Length: 111
View 1 (cartoon, one colour):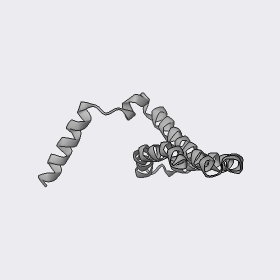
View 2 (view 1 turned 120 degrees about the vertical axis):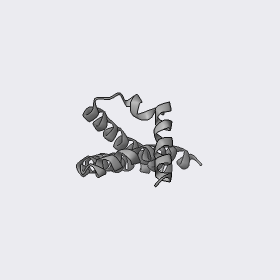
View 3 (view 1 turned 45 degrees about the vertical axis):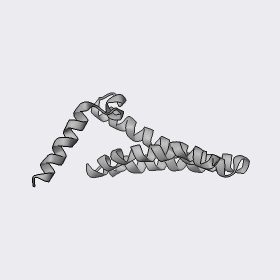
């Protein structure tokens, strides 16, 4: 139970990371994903070396979450820097988002 609990924040970070990673891949800026992945990898390898001998699988799950979160935070920071917008604009759902989704689906249905 405990390792899964420690892993949940990382799973959520990976879920939130997907649109950002797709954005950078789709705009042919794969370098951002590579750097973010390397940041996550360094966090995970370093943390595993330190925490696994002491905390075992729970330490590994915690460090994995930290690595995924580090990758997400890097891409979110990069996106904020490039687009000069508040992070809250990216993380909150607004009524206009629902309108956009509705119009998108309706337009697709009328192909």
